Image 1 (cartoon, one colour):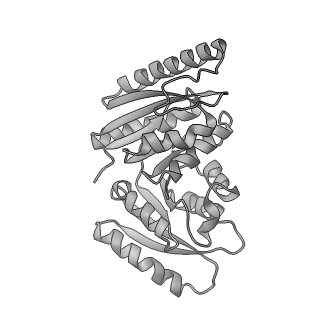
Image 2 (image 1 turned 45 degrees about the vertical axis):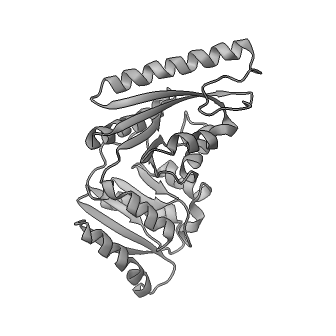
Image 3 (image 1 turned 90 degrees about the horizontal axis):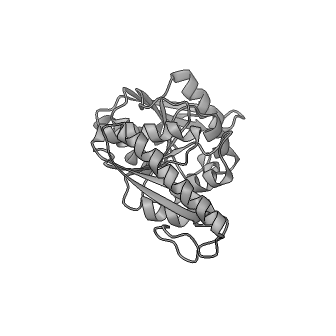
Length: 280
């Protein structure tokens, strides 16, 4: 099992380099194919746009030239980055309005196994980056891996699975198997609102058994919520264990339900310094 078709983007920002290098490393490891999208945003909404190759006719000549120069420059940079590595790849340019990001991600992610994206929050990120990340997750076509700019280009040896027994958490865990099977240790973490841990431990026993059947070294850890936020508890667990990856569902039940791109998810993606694997 491996991610054979990997999707990423190149927008020319320094904070995107970690994501594209991560995508390259995963592609090389799986001997797969990397597809790189180079987006440029128009202020005028296109009347049509799959695969977003045409510039809207309502765009002024000045903006038309700017957008054309930008996507061609990004394409050249992406090709230079990928050509420096021993990897099969293709590059697609996309000129679009920000409102079309969900359509774009639905189109390009349809035949991908994994989408690798940079952290949507940071000094050189914009609201469009947050929308693109959310759109990629909501396509349901493939999971996403959100990579912080300072992350190493390998997945490392220890992973945390944020587990609440939900369908979304199970889907994320199953889709992350190519990464989890490479880990030396997987920490199944449950955030409990109750002082009694028996039910929580029982809830996690099935997923632990499933992972163990894949020859994964797995451990169950039930953590008391005790007034702390879920993302802060996960981030603290990452620090305490030296984990290199967090796996979690994009939607879930309490207490993970708070996650989809509200304040909790923002906190998680802003403060977590390791890649976060998410699936809806």
